[in-house]
Length: 232
Image 1 (cartoon, rainbow, N blue to C red):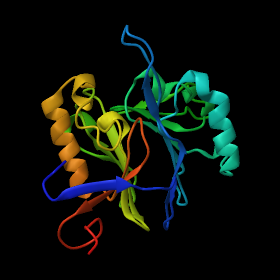
Image 2: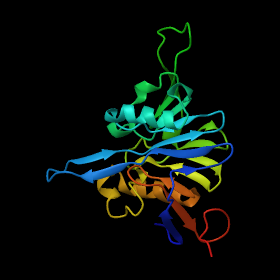
Image 3: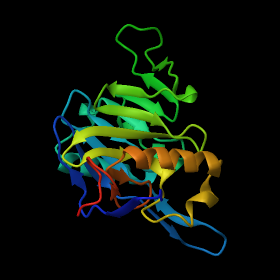
Protein backbone atom coordinates (compact mmCIF):
# COMPACT_ATOMS: atom_id res chain seq x y z
CA UNK A 1 0.00 0.00 0.00
CA UNK A 2 0.98 3.65 -0.25
CA UNK A 3 2.82 5.26 2.67
CA UNK A 4 0.25 6.71 5.05
CA UNK A 5 -2.51 4.45 3.71
CA UNK A 6 -4.13 1.58 5.54
CA UNK A 7 -7.15 -0.58 4.78
CA UNK A 8 -9.83 -2.40 6.75
CA UNK A 9 -12.74 -4.67 5.79
CA UNK A 10 -15.91 -2.77 4.96
CA UNK A 11 -18.00 -5.38 6.77
CA UNK A 12 -21.04 -4.75 4.56
CA UNK A 13 -22.14 -5.26 1.00
CA UNK A 14 -23.92 -1.95 0.48
CA UNK A 15 -22.86 1.68 0.72
CA UNK A 16 -25.82 4.08 0.74
CA UNK A 17 -25.68 7.46 -0.90
CA UNK A 18 -27.46 10.14 -2.89
CA UNK A 19 -27.98 10.05 -5.76
CA UNK A 20 -26.13 6.73 -5.97
CA UNK A 21 -25.82 3.73 -3.68
CA UNK A 22 -23.46 0.84 -4.34
CA UNK A 23 -24.36 -2.78 -3.63
CA UNK A 24 -22.09 -5.80 -4.05
CA UNK A 25 -24.39 -8.46 -5.49
CA UNK A 26 -21.67 -11.10 -5.56
CA UNK A 27 -18.44 -11.15 -3.58
CA UNK A 28 -15.70 -12.49 -5.81
CA UNK A 29 -13.43 -15.38 -4.86
CA UNK A 30 -10.40 -17.28 -6.13
CA UNK A 31 -9.50 -20.64 -4.60
CA UNK A 32 -6.61 -22.92 -5.63
CA UNK A 33 -7.99 -26.31 -6.67
CA UNK A 34 -5.22 -28.51 -8.05
CA UNK A 35 -1.47 -28.90 -8.32
CA UNK A 36 -1.69 -28.17 -12.04
CA UNK A 37 -2.34 -24.51 -11.24
CA UNK A 38 -6.07 -24.50 -11.85
CA UNK A 39 -8.36 -22.68 -9.45
CA UNK A 40 -12.01 -21.98 -8.79
CA UNK A 41 -12.89 -18.35 -9.35
CA UNK A 42 -15.66 -15.90 -10.03
CA UNK A 43 -15.60 -12.13 -9.85
CA UNK A 44 -17.30 -9.50 -7.75
CA UNK A 45 -20.47 -8.08 -9.30
CA UNK A 46 -21.49 -4.60 -8.22
CA UNK A 47 -24.76 -2.72 -8.69
CA UNK A 48 -24.83 1.10 -8.90
CA UNK A 49 -28.28 2.67 -8.71
CA UNK A 50 -30.30 5.68 -7.61
CA UNK A 51 -29.66 8.24 -10.34
CA UNK A 52 -30.33 8.26 -14.08
CA UNK A 53 -27.66 5.56 -14.53
CA UNK A 54 -28.33 2.04 -13.26
CA UNK A 55 -25.09 0.19 -13.82
CA UNK A 56 -23.70 -3.27 -13.26
CA UNK A 57 -19.93 -3.54 -12.88
CA UNK A 58 -18.88 -6.96 -14.22
CA UNK A 59 -21.34 -9.81 -14.73
CA UNK A 60 -19.59 -12.90 -13.36
CA UNK A 61 -18.96 -16.05 -15.37
CA UNK A 62 -21.52 -17.79 -17.60
CA UNK A 63 -22.04 -20.48 -14.96
CA UNK A 64 -23.64 -17.91 -12.64
CA UNK A 65 -26.40 -16.39 -14.76
CA UNK A 66 -29.29 -17.73 -12.68
CA UNK A 67 -27.66 -16.56 -9.48
CA UNK A 68 -27.12 -13.08 -10.92
CA UNK A 69 -30.75 -12.80 -11.98
CA UNK A 70 -31.84 -13.92 -8.50
CA UNK A 71 -29.59 -11.29 -6.88
CA UNK A 72 -31.01 -8.58 -9.11
CA UNK A 73 -34.54 -9.69 -8.27
CA UNK A 74 -33.73 -9.61 -4.54
CA UNK A 75 -32.36 -6.09 -5.00
CA UNK A 76 -35.55 -4.98 -6.74
CA UNK A 77 -33.65 -4.21 -9.94
CA UNK A 78 -34.85 -6.22 -12.95
CA UNK A 79 -32.30 -6.77 -15.73
CA UNK A 80 -34.24 -4.61 -18.17
CA UNK A 81 -33.70 -1.61 -15.85
CA UNK A 82 -29.90 -1.82 -16.21
CA UNK A 83 -28.79 1.08 -18.42
CA UNK A 84 -25.04 0.31 -18.44
CA UNK A 85 -22.98 -2.86 -18.03
CA UNK A 86 -19.40 -1.82 -17.28
CA UNK A 87 -16.98 -4.74 -17.48
CA UNK A 88 -13.56 -3.97 -16.08
CA UNK A 89 -11.87 -6.27 -18.62
CA UNK A 90 -12.59 -9.13 -20.96
CA UNK A 91 -11.75 -12.24 -18.91
CA UNK A 92 -14.48 -14.89 -18.92
CA UNK A 93 -15.35 -14.57 -15.22
CA UNK A 94 -16.17 -10.88 -15.74
CA UNK A 95 -18.15 -10.88 -19.01
CA UNK A 96 -20.02 -14.18 -18.95
CA UNK A 97 -23.56 -12.80 -18.71
CA UNK A 98 -23.63 -9.88 -21.11
CA UNK A 99 -26.47 -11.54 -23.01
CA UNK A 100 -28.82 -10.90 -20.07
CA UNK A 101 -28.78 -7.14 -20.73
CA UNK A 102 -29.60 -6.51 -24.42
CA UNK A 103 -31.02 -3.03 -23.71
CA UNK A 104 -27.92 -1.73 -21.90
CA UNK A 105 -24.92 0.20 -23.08
CA UNK A 106 -22.01 -2.24 -22.76
CA UNK A 107 -18.41 -1.43 -21.94
CA UNK A 108 -15.73 -4.13 -21.97
CA UNK A 109 -12.34 -2.70 -21.09
CA UNK A 110 -11.81 0.22 -23.47
CA UNK A 111 -14.63 -0.69 -25.90
CA UNK A 112 -18.14 0.76 -25.63
CA UNK A 113 -21.24 -0.14 -27.60
CA UNK A 114 -24.88 0.86 -27.39
CA UNK A 115 -27.98 -1.07 -28.42
CA UNK A 116 -29.24 -0.39 -31.91
CA UNK A 117 -32.40 1.67 -32.20
CA UNK A 118 -35.62 0.72 -33.96
CA UNK A 119 -35.20 0.90 -37.71
CA UNK A 120 -31.40 1.12 -37.61
CA UNK A 121 -29.63 -0.94 -40.24
CA UNK A 122 -28.84 -4.42 -38.95
CA UNK A 123 -30.55 -3.85 -35.61
CA UNK A 124 -27.40 -4.75 -33.68
CA UNK A 125 -25.13 -2.84 -31.31
CA UNK A 126 -23.31 0.33 -32.31
CA UNK A 127 -19.65 0.93 -31.45
CA UNK A 128 -19.05 4.24 -29.65
CA UNK A 129 -15.48 5.63 -29.81
CA UNK A 130 -13.78 6.52 -26.52
CA UNK A 131 -10.37 7.79 -25.45
CA UNK A 132 -9.87 5.44 -22.49
CA UNK A 133 -6.80 4.03 -24.22
CA UNK A 134 -5.32 7.55 -24.16
CA UNK A 135 -6.04 7.96 -20.47
CA UNK A 136 -9.30 9.92 -20.78
CA UNK A 137 -12.08 8.75 -18.42
CA UNK A 138 -15.60 7.99 -19.63
CA UNK A 139 -18.43 9.39 -17.51
CA UNK A 140 -21.89 7.83 -17.85
CA UNK A 141 -23.01 10.45 -15.28
CA UNK A 142 -20.44 13.25 -15.00
CA UNK A 143 -19.48 14.08 -11.45
CA UNK A 144 -21.00 10.90 -10.06
CA UNK A 145 -20.25 7.77 -12.12
CA UNK A 146 -16.94 7.67 -13.97
CA UNK A 147 -14.98 4.92 -15.71
CA UNK A 148 -11.23 5.27 -15.11
CA UNK A 149 -8.54 3.65 -17.25
CA UNK A 150 -6.50 1.46 -14.87
CA UNK A 151 -4.25 -0.71 -17.06
CA UNK A 152 -1.89 -3.37 -15.80
CA UNK A 153 -3.74 -6.60 -15.07
CA UNK A 154 -4.48 -6.39 -18.79
CA UNK A 155 -3.85 -3.38 -20.99
CA UNK A 156 -7.53 -2.56 -21.48
CA UNK A 157 -8.58 -2.58 -17.83
CA UNK A 158 -10.89 -0.04 -16.20
CA UNK A 159 -12.28 0.73 -12.75
CA UNK A 160 -15.58 2.43 -11.98
CA UNK A 161 -15.70 5.30 -9.48
CA UNK A 162 -18.95 6.31 -7.77
CA UNK A 163 -18.67 9.66 -6.01
CA UNK A 164 -20.80 11.20 -3.27
CA UNK A 165 -21.81 8.09 -1.33
CA UNK A 166 -22.15 8.12 2.46
CA UNK A 167 -18.54 6.89 2.67
CA UNK A 168 -17.13 9.04 -0.09
CA UNK A 169 -15.83 7.58 -3.35
CA UNK A 170 -16.42 3.88 -3.99
CA UNK A 171 -14.27 2.27 -6.70
CA UNK A 172 -15.28 -1.07 -8.22
CA UNK A 173 -11.78 -2.01 -9.29
CA UNK A 174 -12.03 -5.36 -11.02
CA UNK A 175 -8.73 -7.24 -10.91
CA UNK A 176 -6.68 -4.13 -10.25
CA UNK A 177 -6.95 -5.51 -6.70
CA UNK A 178 -7.46 -9.22 -6.19
CA UNK A 179 -8.52 -8.69 -2.58
CA UNK A 180 -7.55 -6.65 0.46
CA UNK A 181 -3.94 -7.39 1.41
CA UNK A 182 -3.09 -8.93 -1.96
CA UNK A 183 0.45 -7.51 -2.11
CA UNK A 184 2.12 -10.89 -2.51
CA UNK A 185 -0.11 -12.27 -5.26
CA UNK A 186 -1.46 -9.75 -7.76
CA UNK A 187 1.83 -9.36 -9.64
CA UNK A 188 1.86 -12.98 -10.82
CA UNK A 189 -1.46 -12.37 -12.60
CA UNK A 190 -0.47 -9.06 -14.19
CA UNK A 191 0.42 -8.43 -17.83
CA UNK A 192 2.33 -5.30 -16.80
CA UNK A 193 3.15 -5.15 -13.07
CA UNK A 194 4.79 -1.68 -13.11
CA UNK A 195 1.78 -0.21 -14.92
CA UNK A 196 -0.63 -1.98 -12.57
CA UNK A 197 1.29 -0.65 -9.57
CA UNK A 198 0.82 2.90 -10.92
CA UNK A 199 -2.89 2.26 -11.46
CA UNK A 200 -3.25 0.84 -7.94
CA UNK A 201 -1.60 3.93 -6.49
CA UNK A 202 -3.89 6.28 -8.41
CA UNK A 203 -6.99 4.47 -7.15
CA UNK A 204 -5.77 4.41 -3.53
CA UNK A 205 -5.27 8.17 -3.73
CA UNK A 206 -8.98 8.77 -4.45
CA UNK A 207 -10.95 5.75 -3.16
CA UNK A 208 -12.61 5.55 0.23
CA UNK A 209 -13.99 2.06 -0.48
CA UNK A 210 -12.59 -0.48 -2.96
CA UNK A 211 -14.52 -3.44 -4.34
CA UNK A 212 -11.78 -5.86 -5.49
CA UNK A 213 -12.20 -8.49 -8.17
CA UNK A 214 -11.95 -11.57 -5.97
CA UNK A 215 -12.59 -10.58 -2.38
CA UNK A 216 -14.67 -8.57 0.06
CA UNK A 217 -14.96 -4.77 -0.22
CA UNK A 218 -12.59 -2.78 1.98
CA UNK A 219 -12.19 0.74 3.36
CA UNK A 220 -9.21 2.95 2.55
CA UNK A 221 -7.90 5.36 5.18
CA UNK A 222 -5.35 8.09 4.45
CA UNK A 223 -3.49 10.44 6.73
CA UNK A 224 -4.58 14.06 6.46
CA UNK A 225 -7.95 15.79 6.12
CA UNK A 226 -11.19 14.92 4.38
CA UNK A 227 -12.97 11.71 3.57
CA UNK A 228 -11.02 8.48 3.71
CA UNK A 229 -8.75 9.71 6.50
CA UNK A 230 -7.50 7.64 9.37
CA UNK A 231 -9.90 8.14 12.31
CA UNK A 232 -8.43 9.42 15.61
